[in-house]
Length: 453
Image (cartoon, rainbow, N blue to C red; front, side):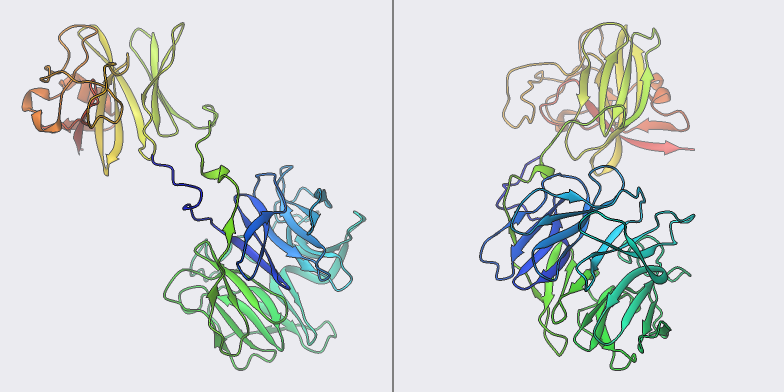
């Protein structure tokens, strides 16, 4: 797998929020800040490399609050905009905790199902910055709160997934808007005529903006407080608009991993924010994983001397008593699965299913691994091959089947019936008369599998 350079690798940006000339967002499992003019690189606010969502800058521009899973369940964290250690404010242990904004009193506005019998019963709470007890707001079960100078808008407790995850959902838990126009605590339904999933309400001047997919694709809309003058501000022929937020004048949202801004709701066109991340793209680099977590399946040999084990798209040979574990196939971007062992002429072989060429096919290799050899032109692994293919299966133990190029394959390379019968338990694969081998990969061949019921 070719690793792109850090300067060329695009970042996937989400959950933006505006304040003055700054925009907060998440990328690479951390919270970032950047200048709106795009004149420099973004800088990290957090450095924990864990899933984070919904960063929100305080009204005075000094503090950023966000939802972090650093300690397991999502909780509310804050940090200074100018830099400094982050502090955790809540210890609720609810998977539905989300930062939604700030109150006029300078407290963090949060929705959570903490203490409720059902995860859909999320309440709005205000959390003080000194870590004191949170105050439950008198709105009932809600998914979001948008407070403005003219009215308060609530989003009904949604289904638990944003609209881009479950596109064109029309069930009973789709998001709905409710508005208190008089400020007396009486809420009425807003935009009841829209047959879509509504989310992320935000006040912009005298208009209430929100996301909806009632036209088939999630887009940004706005209307007056009485529901009139409904306008669409983003196209519906591309990706979903997501994670809308604003500062009372402008609206920013994400789409396909990019951040877009609307300078006003009176005819302005969306423009993409040019944001560059620093750092080494840690989450895009290969890293070791725990085999126990990604274990797929295993097939022991008849004498029980070893097993072929599938782990996260790779196949390994593991001895039961002593000896090293061998990687039989570990090609990045290729998934190998369902390994099966078989024995022929006293030698252990392994067959598995691979998608290296697009369609599923069978691939064979000796359990001892691929034969070493000097590098050869065009060989991705630097293994040499015999000048002419040997018959399959090998005629003697320790003599792996080799071949030079795919063009030299012949019908004599057809696998034995015993190998086909052990390759799948529920179906009988029949190998093509012309198995294909990757050039320069001795000891391994791939045959197209056709399954008969």
